[in-house]
Each structure stands twice: as structure tokens, then as C-alpha cells.
Image (cartoon, rainbow, N blue to C red; front, top):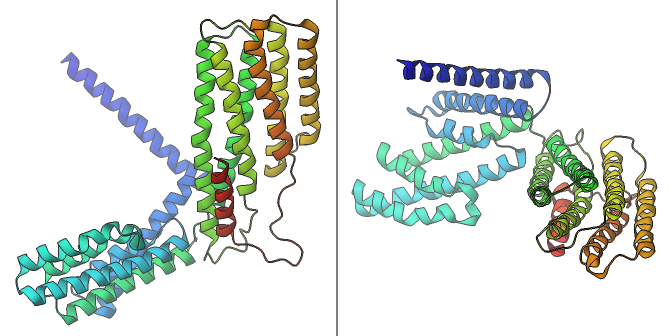
Length: 407
């Protein structure tokens, strides 16, 4: 009885937790724009598109069981209008191939089972054909539905093609006209989040170096620095989705914000150098390495704090805050770094201490060089005077090419 009571109590707590989480999602949807509201809107649009396609197919096409129209309409309400159009074309082509293959196989064999086996063998490789994207499998699905639901004659093919075209049209039009999805906000949040994480990590390392830090602390900093890679990948994906979401979007003019690729690219370079500093600190914490001089570490921490201020100023310049300008805080960081070099010249630490001091100095010098080279550059304009404005997708692709060339 006791175990049953505990299980019931645990189940009750889980249900309450799920209820609270669900209620919080509803509150977020109602209160402010964000991912939850976007998902709710897209889900509602998909449901409306499916029902609308079903009704139109029943009334206008007079199809007795129009299952393809709502199915296609449901799939067409995608994350962006551009993707809906591309998927619509791919879906239509895939269904045409499947229907023609089913009709041809049945005409040749005059046997349902043999025709089904033959057509699946022929069209399943299309599921992995790049030209069909993720819609290739629908060739096999459409052939399967036709062969198992009726006689695959000319009338059946025309009806199913009409359903496919109707479902694609309903889904695409509804997605483009009713609250067309725009994902620029997530790109801004993701890019700003990268700057915030670099800023916070540099400050955390600086605070740790001023105190008694351990090898576990250094490994934690290195793991956190490694996590910047995934944040940056997410930010690049968000920028790509944002630029894609305004392509073919009727609301593109109200949402013509600056491309964030030139903002993220310098942050990626600085993040790699920050990871280099954390790796050097982690190496310095291994057994057998000499201890760094406390005054050196304290001054080194000051340089990292000033570097974090440069990143924060860069973030503020691009995302609407008003911290000090990057040149001002960068000069303060350089001044502190010169004091660090002067300290080593005055104190002349023992030779084995250079095993620690030397790599740390090299890494922080590189960090400041990167900050000076990348984060002080003015924001790239969207177009020159009288020049032609490049499309968001092409500009994003060009920055991706530059980024890949660096690595």
C-alpha cells in the first residue's frame, strides 16, 4: 500500500508539473511574441488549411474520399513561405511520379500485388534524391495509396493530381497570407546570445583567476568555451531561417532588417580565441606545471574583464543598448595589457614560469588583436547610395563561404 501511495503521489506531482508547464506556455503565447506564439499560430494555420482543402475537394472536385488534399495542405504550412513554395513544387512532382508509376505498373502486370512490389522497388530510391528534398518518399506514398484504394485509371490519376495541386495551393496561400512567418527575432536573439555568452565567460574566467582556482574550474571554463561552437551554429541557422523567411514573403518590406551575418562572423572569431585562452588556462592547471604568479594573474584577469567590456559594447552597438563605444573600452584593455607586459619585465620571473606566462600572454594578445580588427569595424550597410541591395539569402551564403574558408 505504501508503494502504491508513493507512486500515486509521484504521478500527481508529475501531472501538476506538466500542468504548470502547459499553463506557462499558454501565458507566454498570450503575453508576448516569441517561439511559443509562432508555433501556436503555425499549428492553427495547418489545421485550418487541412480542413479547408478537405471541404474544397469534396465540393468542387467531388472526390468521394479526398485524403490527399488535406494531407498536402497540412505539409505545406511550413516555417517559411519560401520553404512552402519549394516543398509544394517538390511534392507535386513526387506525387506525379508516384501516380504515373502506379498506373504504368498496374497496366503492365494487371496484378495488384505484383504492381505494388514493382512500383515500390522503382520509386523508393527517389526518397533520397536531392532534387525532391524531403518530399521524395511521397512518390512511394502516393503510389501506395492509389494501388490500395482503387483502380489506377486515368480518372483516378486526374482526381489525385487535382487533390495534390489543391492541397498545395491552399497550404501555400494560407501560409503566405495569414500571419506569414518571419523569424528575424530569433536571429537577433541568437546572435546577441553569442555575445552575451562570450562576455559572461570572460568575466567568469577573470573572477576565477583572482581567487584560488583549480583544475576543475579550468576544465569547466574550457567546456563552456567549447559550448560556444554550438551556440554559434544555432545562430547561423537562425540567420539563415530569418533571411529565408522574408524571401517571397508579402510582409518583407516591414521586416527589412539588417543582415546579421557581418555581426556574427567577428563574434565567431573572438569565440575561437576565447576558447584558446581557456585551453591555455586548463593546460596550466595540469600536474607538473609551475604555478602562475598571483600578481600576474590578477592583472591578466583585469585584461579579460576589459576584453569582456569590448564584447559588451559591440553587442550594445548592434542591438540597441548604449554602453561605452568599443574603441574606448578597447584602449582601456590595451593599456591594461601593456601594464601586464611591464610587470613581467620588472619582476623577471624564473624561467620555468614562462611556461605559463608566455602562452597566456600570446593568447590574450591575439584576443585583443581580434577585438581591434573585427569588433571596431563599422556595421556594413545594406546597400550603397544608388546601389542594388543584395538579397538576404545571397548575402548570408557569401558570409557562410567566408566563414568556412576561415576554418
